[in-house]
Image (cartoon, rainbow, N blue to C red; front, side, top):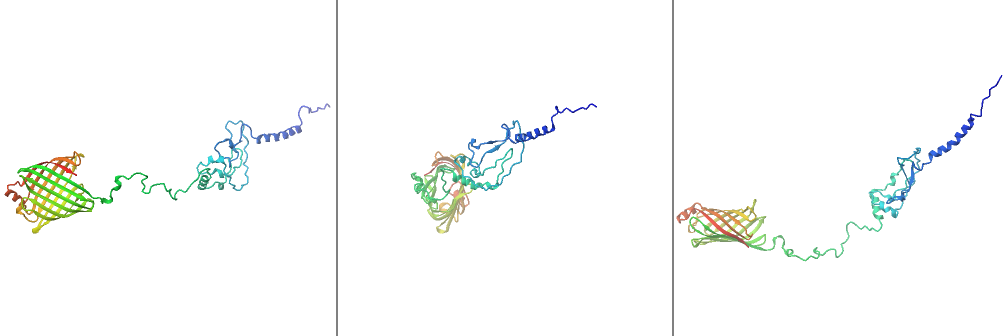
Amino acid sequence: MKMHRRNTSIVPPRSALLAALLLASPLTGAAQSAPASSSGTAPMGMGAMPGMDRAGMHDMAMPAGTGSAANPAKKSPVRKAKKPNTPVAPTPSSTGMQGMGDMDHGSAPAAPVASGHDMPLMDPQAVPDANHGAAHDMDSAPGMTIGPMQGGHAPADARSGDYSDGIAAAPAHGLHMHGSAPVGMLLVDQLEAFDGRDANGQSWEIQGWYGNDSDKLWLRSEGERSRGKLEDANVEAFWNHSMATFWNTQLGVRHDFGEGPARSWAAFGVQGLAPYWFELEATGYVGAGSRTAARLRAEYELLFTQRLILQPEAEINLYGKSDPQRHIGSGISDVQFGLRLRYEIRRQFAPYVGVNWVRRVGTSADYARQYRQPVLDRQIVAGVRIWF
């Protein structure tokens, strides 16, 4: 019988294949664990980055770009034992980082090196308090001296004793405070000529004062001249005392003269500026022979412009008893109402024109009829207003 033998020269033995695989295994593991030159993570020196604090930051592993040819095998991060927190003194090159927020980069501990995309672990205890870090940064700034925010004494030449800073005193510095300086004024409110039904003539109304805001000497006069003679006039002198804002009390005397016998009165009253800018005046009089009288006045200034002004005025005179020698009856003697339109060429000088009505009442009207005078007299007036 013919025997067939197997040809072993073509097929390699199994032992040779196993040996080749065992030799190739270490090379493959080394190739997988070693980072490629164009991929993976490469240590990057922080010294190449300007303005960064290199005192507490060592080489940091940067992630590889998206265009890497091969990705390294992922490995579990290696955890190292915690080290005690040892602050690192800042170097001159770390001063540029001290202006960033509330972080104190000079005292940050060294970060452990990690591979792949893993970030280094940070110990929460290593982050200092924000306020403490800011104070540390201010103290560690070279060449800077921080003094106290407040307190201390100003230099001797910081300012002058009167806070004038060397500026010469102006005349306004000599003003008296609280109205203590005496001032005076003379106001010719009405100096006019009139033309009425019965006659024409001239009349005036003048007042002036001198003193301070609290106390003044107040003078007042008014009168009328007609048919070439002085018909009626009076002069008053008061001590004017301020009792409230815009209001004054008056105490003084009054003297009447003109047609008939002269009369003298003790006078007292009040005057001031009422709401809505009405000027009011109320005065009472007591004379010899149980004579009494009163006068009420009100006036207002209506400004069409800053220079064109309409001034209405009303006046009422009352007497306690009749005085036939002066043609005055008891009760309401007369009522006057006037409208005067003035134009202030200057504040101190203003011509005006107007109309004035005089209505005699009661016994005074009877005296007017007896002496052939009108009971209701309408007068056209023109004059000038002056004050000094």
